[in-house]
Image (cartoon, rainbow, N blue to C red; front, side, top):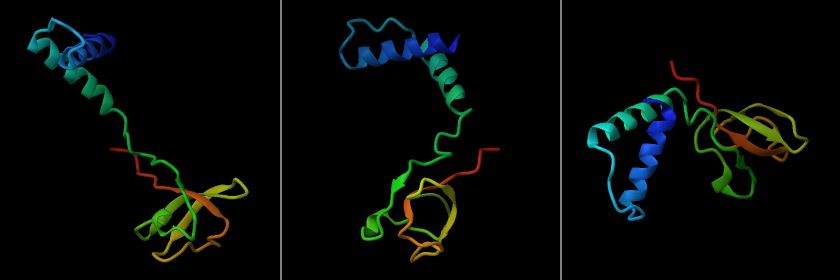
Length: 108
Protein backbone atom coordinates (compact mmCIF):
# COMPACT_ATOMS: atom_id res chain seq x y z
CA UNK A 1 0.00 0.00 0.00
CA UNK A 2 1.29 3.46 -0.90
CA UNK A 3 1.56 6.17 1.75
CA UNK A 4 -0.97 8.34 -0.09
CA UNK A 5 -3.53 5.50 -0.04
CA UNK A 6 -2.88 4.83 3.65
CA UNK A 7 -3.51 8.48 4.48
CA UNK A 8 -6.72 8.51 2.44
CA UNK A 9 -7.97 5.41 4.27
CA UNK A 10 -7.22 6.94 7.66
CA UNK A 11 -8.81 10.26 6.74
CA UNK A 12 -11.97 8.49 5.54
CA UNK A 13 -12.08 6.39 8.71
CA UNK A 14 -11.69 9.48 10.88
CA UNK A 15 -14.56 11.17 9.04
CA UNK A 16 -16.68 8.05 9.63
CA UNK A 17 -15.79 8.08 13.34
CA UNK A 18 -16.84 11.73 13.56
CA UNK A 19 -20.18 11.00 11.91
CA UNK A 20 -19.36 12.70 8.61
CA UNK A 21 -19.63 9.43 6.66
CA UNK A 22 -22.45 6.90 6.69
CA UNK A 23 -20.52 3.68 6.09
CA UNK A 24 -17.28 2.26 7.37
CA UNK A 25 -15.98 0.92 4.06
CA UNK A 26 -12.52 -0.25 5.09
CA UNK A 27 -11.90 -3.61 6.72
CA UNK A 28 -9.98 -3.63 10.02
CA UNK A 29 -7.06 -5.37 8.30
CA UNK A 30 -6.75 -2.46 5.81
CA UNK A 31 -6.98 0.07 8.66
CA UNK A 32 -4.19 -1.74 10.51
CA UNK A 33 -2.02 -1.78 7.39
CA UNK A 34 -2.67 1.92 6.82
CA UNK A 35 -1.75 2.74 10.44
CA UNK A 36 1.46 0.69 10.15
CA UNK A 37 2.50 2.50 6.97
CA UNK A 38 1.82 5.97 8.32
CA UNK A 39 3.58 5.20 11.62
CA UNK A 40 6.57 3.84 9.74
CA UNK A 41 6.85 7.11 7.82
CA UNK A 42 6.36 9.27 10.91
CA UNK A 43 9.10 7.38 12.79
CA UNK A 44 11.59 8.38 10.10
CA UNK A 45 11.41 11.92 11.42
CA UNK A 46 12.36 13.12 14.86
CA UNK A 47 9.34 15.36 15.36
CA UNK A 48 10.71 17.12 18.41
CA UNK A 49 14.26 17.58 17.10
CA UNK A 50 13.96 21.35 17.09
CA UNK A 51 11.58 22.85 19.55
CA UNK A 52 9.62 25.97 18.84
CA UNK A 53 11.34 29.25 19.52
CA UNK A 54 10.37 30.65 22.90
CA UNK A 55 10.09 34.43 23.12
CA UNK A 56 12.37 35.48 25.97
CA UNK A 57 11.68 38.37 28.32
CA UNK A 58 13.91 38.63 31.38
CA UNK A 59 11.06 40.18 33.35
CA UNK A 60 8.74 37.22 32.70
CA UNK A 61 9.95 34.17 34.63
CA UNK A 62 7.72 31.83 32.59
CA UNK A 63 9.81 32.61 29.47
CA UNK A 64 13.06 31.43 31.05
CA UNK A 65 14.45 27.90 30.48
CA UNK A 66 13.78 25.59 33.42
CA UNK A 67 17.03 23.59 33.25
CA UNK A 68 20.73 24.31 33.06
CA UNK A 69 22.13 23.68 29.58
CA UNK A 70 23.06 24.89 26.12
CA UNK A 71 20.31 26.54 24.08
CA UNK A 72 20.16 27.98 20.60
CA UNK A 73 19.41 31.67 21.03
CA UNK A 74 18.48 34.55 18.77
CA UNK A 75 19.71 37.97 19.82
CA UNK A 76 17.94 41.26 19.14
CA UNK A 77 20.40 41.96 16.31
CA UNK A 78 19.23 38.73 14.61
CA UNK A 79 22.39 36.72 15.25
CA UNK A 80 21.86 33.10 16.25
CA UNK A 81 24.30 31.07 18.34
CA UNK A 82 24.59 28.67 21.26
CA UNK A 83 24.35 30.09 24.74
CA UNK A 84 24.45 28.57 28.22
CA UNK A 85 21.59 29.02 30.66
CA UNK A 86 23.18 28.56 34.07
CA UNK A 87 19.96 28.11 36.00
CA UNK A 88 19.52 31.77 36.92
CA UNK A 89 20.53 33.61 33.78
CA UNK A 90 22.36 33.51 30.46
CA UNK A 91 26.14 33.53 30.42
CA UNK A 92 25.75 36.33 27.84
CA UNK A 93 23.95 39.60 28.51
CA UNK A 94 20.31 38.54 28.89
CA UNK A 95 19.13 41.94 27.60
CA UNK A 96 20.34 40.97 24.11
CA UNK A 97 18.50 37.64 23.89
CA UNK A 98 15.02 37.63 22.34
CA UNK A 99 14.33 33.93 21.65
CA UNK A 100 15.69 30.52 22.68
CA UNK A 101 15.11 26.94 21.51
CA UNK A 102 16.06 23.44 22.59
CA UNK A 103 17.79 21.27 19.99
CA UNK A 104 17.52 17.50 20.42
CA UNK A 105 20.18 15.28 18.79
CA UNK A 106 18.93 13.23 15.81
CA UNK A 107 17.68 9.76 16.58
CA UNK A 108 20.11 6.92 16.01
